[in-house]
Image: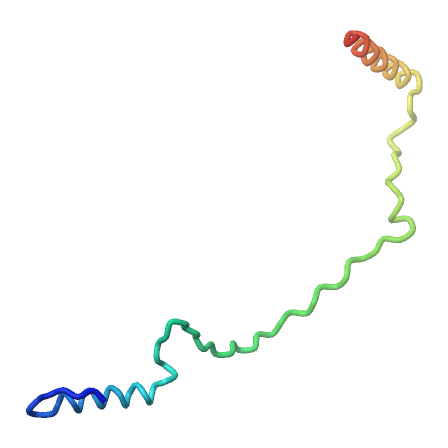
Length: 95
């Protein structure tokens, strides 16, 4: 206990009261390492898990079929030969 000189003794009483309060509130005293006491959160209901993804089977795995019409093989051949010629010329120009 801390002793101080005072005619009325009120300071001694205040110091003694503070020391007793500090002993009563040991859980609330501060230190260099501060650990806060957290209350447990209220239980929050969790939503049910989503259903598993559907796995495609059979016809769903096949790519879609092109049904826009008959292919014109002559036009297709002409276009491919033009593209081939352009690529061949580009390669020759690099040499």
